[in-house]
Length: 136
Image (tube, rainbow, N blue to C red; front, side, top):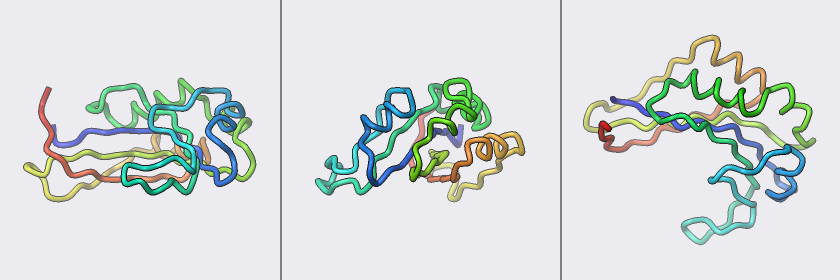
């Protein structure tokens, strides 16, 4: 396989803590969530608190299924009701691609995927990560 995906719903806040966001959203934070003053891998501090809900599907699952998975765990209507004022929502798609097989990545989202992004009223962030993938 040439591509794998990591998909998450994120809430960013400059003023709330991770505990505050989790309380307001009614769900625990995902494993890559962090407070804004938490130390990063390079000993700098994060500038924003980010609460994340990660898709729990395998990385080789199509993007549309990852997005559908998020809606099962946090329906867009409830999410919008709980989203604290002043916070921004993002749907983050990480694309892992095998540099031994391809040089560039293109990403096509079907209308159903775009509808899910719009249902959350979220920004769409796509980040591509070059790597050497192994077929498992």
